[in-house]
Image (cartoon, rainbow, N blue to C red; front, side, top):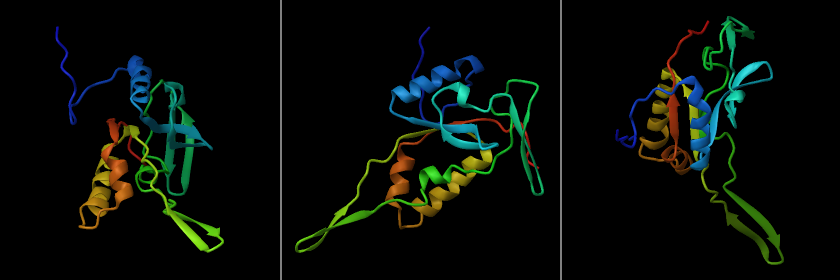
Amino acid sequence: MTISPLQAGDQVVVEHEHFQQLLVVLRSRGYEVVGPTVRDNAIVYDTLTSVADLPIGYTDEQDGGIYRLKKRADKALFGYAVGPHSWKKFLHPPTIRLWQARREDDGFHITPENPAAPKYAFLGVRSCELHAIAIQDKVFMGSGHTDPTYQSRRDDLFIVAVNCGQAGG
C-alpha cells in the first residue's frame, strides 16, 4: 500500500490514541503547538507539550455572567464550548517591540527589531474560530496595507480543526 503525502486543505481523522504522535511530529518540524488547556479554572489557549495538557474530561458551563469548569463522564479532548480566549493573540500580539534605542556619547542609536516569527500549530480550532481567522486575514492582509507581523505568523501557521460537539451558553 502506498501512502501519498498530505497537501494543504486535506481532511484526515486523527484517532485519540494518535494525538501524542501528532504533537511529537509537529514539534519535530519546528512548530510550537498551541491548544486548549486548563489554567486558572478556565479552558485557555497555551503551549502544549503533551496530550496530557489538553482539557481531557472537562467541559465548561457558560451562561449570562457564568463560566465554570465541570468534569465530564467521558475522556473527550475537546468537549467544551469556545472559551474566553481567542487565537488572535498568537497571530496579532497585543504588544510587539518594533525597535530599541541606546544612548551613546553622540546621541541615541536606534536598532530595528526583526525577530523571526514563531511557527505555530493550532490544535483544536473550531469552525467559528476558522471564520474569525479568515476575517482577520481580510483585515490584516487583504486591505491593501498588509501587516508584516501578522503575515509572517499566518504564512507558517498549521491548523488542526475539530468539530463543534457542544454549543455555548
